Image 1 (cartoon, helix red, strand yellow):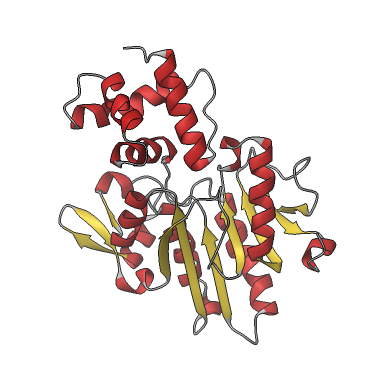
Image 2 (cartoon, rainbow, N blue to C red):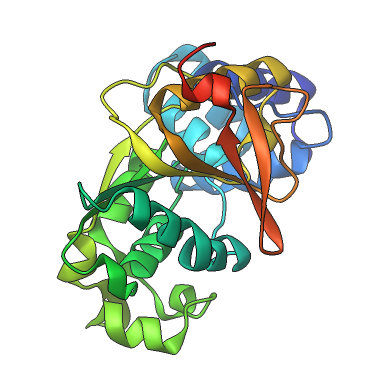
Length: 279
């Protein structure tokens, strides 16, 4: 089936208003593939009928379901590998030197989807000998309450753990859970999760030493990218590190950030001016 133009426009407007995610023309296939299962689950004959319910009940469950369906992205363990290698080999050693007195580290995985990224970060922290006895926390946030609740459960199917999870990590950090696996209590204790919309003010987060915001900015328009990067400056430690996705950059968007090469990849740091809190 082909989604009607006015239905697609309504969905685009709705998702943009609720999440700031910009769906462009040509993404009709994405809307169809994500919403058709929702329509079928409700017994609706087609997407048009399902979306009409959202039109009549703005703020209702159909609206939330549409937004969550279109803002949830697939992920995998240690995705792209290089960011985690850089975290292990350079970022953590640098931070352990500068945090030797407090012995505390906080990492934020923003738009964490079903949790593979924050748990991958937590595994790196847990497997770093120099952090033994330190207080470490990985916060995962997502727009989708369903994803947040799933992260808190920490349950994954055999198919999911097969996507990038080394066998050694599976043995060390997971327990059998029926036909699947579950994050073990020791690793779960290092993590917390909460619902959060990046397009709105960040409140009650505290300060982070490292922020992962990978493959998220690409879905925002220029103004929203600037707003998000400005907010991140308020919650990143002056000497902290920001990870973006490979196709993303702060260049030409927010000049309070500077790129730093890290292995085969890169991270972003606050400029001296921004680190001093001078906007």
